[in-house]
Image (cartoon, rainbow over all chains, first blue to last red; front, side, top):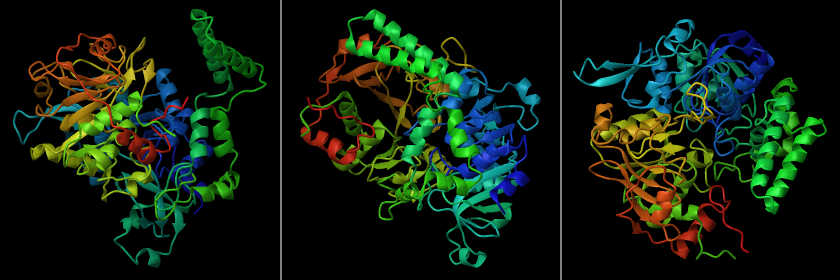
Length: 361
Length: 268
């Protein structure tokens, strides 16, 4: 099956999506890119600790509600920028849980539990503030009516615990190192929440670095982590986690993550002009306070120049829209993406076996 | 040639972290300064400690500085690769078994006198739903602050040290003595100290309020009060000596040679 067909068949508008991987490690970028290309939308998204993959879905307006615990390309972008902008502009419906609670919720989904009691979040803003109110929740059929509720522990009288909902996941998307045609998966390194969501979801799409035969994958069953009957689609997508890492295979792409960091500052050209105008005004104001300062003078001149060049259209910095056009929409599929990244660049990302990462990424 | 007798504020902070890690402790670190501090502890100050990260990687000993807690650099050089839920269970069970082996480093954007930390958002002119500045969210910090003793890493600025934080992401001593118990949190866990670029704050055993315990060779109690947005007791403050040249050499040449987290000042 091709990734195009898998996404067409198994990802529906309005689905509750669960995305595997951890910030910049084993994130299923190939499938997220295909979802973007097919124009699918209105998702309720659980990404565990999210990164650029969920940031792109938010920036492209495909997210009806984001259930967040942490969103950053750690080490490159401290707070994912489209996520941040969407919240600061009041454009994103979202909920905050702690990472512990969110991961336990996904695990509870895999166990089929009716609800989950925890002793976490007590006393904190995570209980006090609700991103999605009870009234609004009642209008969203795929979101439970309550974010959380303090209840008495029936086993220990007097003890207060926090009940949280167990998400019903429609589609899980994960990227693994090896899979076989019958859906059996090998995950090398930390599995994160990927096994949990593969079990919990009605539909699971797996992309993998390599497809091996059903016989071969059974040679060492201590390495297999996902039962094939939990998986609806297996698709070979080499470098399917790019620009994120994939343990035993490749490192993150320093240049790619830096490019995304810079580009995602601006939603589009109009936003870039607006922000550069603000920056120029700020630099001019700083100079007013210390007109003799040479450094401030140079900074103000440069900021003004950058704004004017962007306004006239002569030199607009790369924006988020440019990035997704370049690395998602203009690539028909993963193969086209790899051609665009280029062979030597991909080779530099390969993990060095004695280290487990690349020293040339 | 680098001059190892001179050090930066950040290097002092990393050294302060390392000095506060004890024999055989299990240390929960994130990336950034705490990791540099823990690496320094592991190599020079306290080699018996066990660094772990919230993604579930246990007893990490990375060769190159990792940039995220899920980085291949942690994953390839650790004892066990657990999924995050096992890490959560481990920290909870350490408390249930009344073990006192864990210490955790967390960071934040705002802190109040009782060590309650905000790393979610600054309301500014808005509110939680549409704040002026939004951050990542809790990550593992809320659970860590629930079950573990913590050391909080902050930049020492007036706008960050305030009477009331907008949003409590990670609970400290809440509103003072008995506050954690009233909130349903373990009362025998909580913030132990705050390490900043100006000094080390601890919490009074009676009142649970922050006080200045140590200042650095380049800071002073007056500087700390000036940069703190609430009244802070500085009467008990002592001077903490700076790191030796060998410690600075280790940080620059072996632990973070790529200057991923600690920038070395250029020789003039």
